[in-house]
Length: 305
Image 1 (cartoon, rainbow, N blue to C red):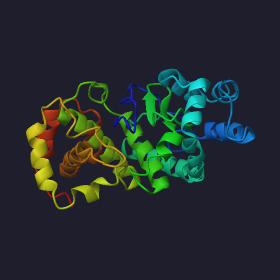
Image 2: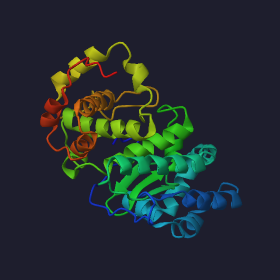
Image 3: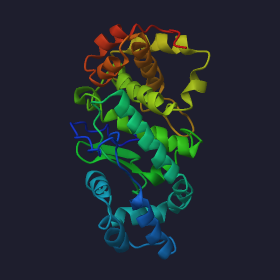
Image 4: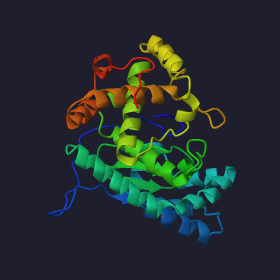
């Protein structure tokens, strides 16, 4: 995952679906109560909680998802207090994103339910939206699901200016990674093709279940020059230097064109498949990037309308 959007590619493993009552569709839990817990403390202290208060009254009192975020990414009361002192606007501005959380939670639950309907084998780990130390935006694990830092994701207006849509699509993108084969999603040294297919698959699944991709700016960025971009990509597929294609976006210079090309390869694969459920299984089970590319029928400039 892009370091500006995720500190680590999600750790993938089998996660048992949450049981549903008779007649109910399988569902995943989306928790936002840690955000409320943080801002109650934040408001009660005039925006200046101490490290001790943050540790005792927020981190220690929070959900298991928050505890997982703290364990994996060294989120402590002291580190949050340090970020608050250095970058107070991050936490003050993040309040505007609280307003969209009820709608985000509703849309996420529907998107994940749609994923489960399209792909009954889907694992359904929980999603926790919390407050961190300014980064990372998202992490995940095999048993505790996806954790999102509201303050970090709220600060990425460059990704998509529509806050609600940004939250829904970025979290869905992260969630899609939890379904992928570990050998692809956890590969720390992927080729351009492998990394682009891992991210492109998450983008395609996000669009499939929400109607939108998460890297919203890429459509405008690639308009009218898709064939030339993809021709250059085809020459670089086996490179291990990803800097021209992946994880190279900056707020003032969005990039990550590998996400877009990977998305188009996966979309071509899905469109050409007669059995769409089997196509989703193939997308999530993908381990051989070159075999998948060949099976997709993709070529530079392919028309996917």
